[in-house]
Image (cartoon, rainbow, N blue to C red):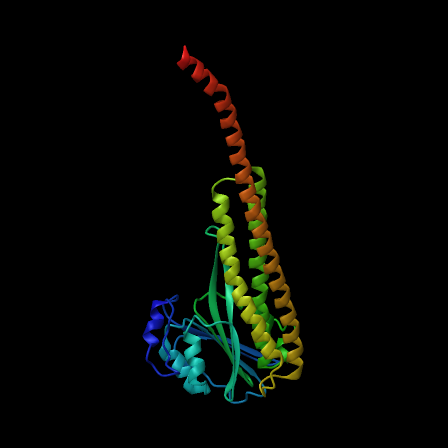
Length: 311
């Protein structure tokens, strides 16, 4: 959070990167497609970017990897008329999930999750999606290929993407990111089951910290999903010129999935609270057994000590 202090006193729209550099050199993965064809290539510099002159016929997707290169972000802003406030939000990686409408295009920010099972940590990454007619620009902090399944569907003409517009591509990217939420929550569920098994077999001093860590990571997930639910609700009610009415139906379906995820998070929180109570009961039970043994020992040896002292 220390890097955010650099923004103190600066005017709105200042493009200041607030994160840690995760790629050596920022680069652009480019896809252009319609129902009949597609182009797939990568750019190392902003000077190689080709602007589509027929946005109504094709969809251009620029996937930006690495947000530390603020010169690249501002150059893209000039090329595609991206509002300065959007540019500022893209490189400020502490944004909550949100949906915003501008005259030049729309912005959707979502957080991607990765679970480190060894450290019981949920790693998050901010993903920003700017879109308008015929254009989608996705911004990622790292070079992790979150959207490889979507690229593959475009290459193979699988599903509806090739026959839809940029707004449907945004839906597909959001849906793909939410699919990872299911994986992360399933993995957390497995860890909770393991804690429960260990607690019932032989509770040790690590149980308490494991429960605490899982509750803390679930809180991170819950906060993001709550904001995502609100953002998707706004998206589904949008009257933006850049969003087709049939895409709204898919966004509503995605909203339902997010509500299900939130229910799962709440169930896991209840389970962890129950396990914490069970752990305290087990510890109390063990303590009572120790006290019973000490009481028996005291009952036996105190009279003997008294008699020995007397005679």
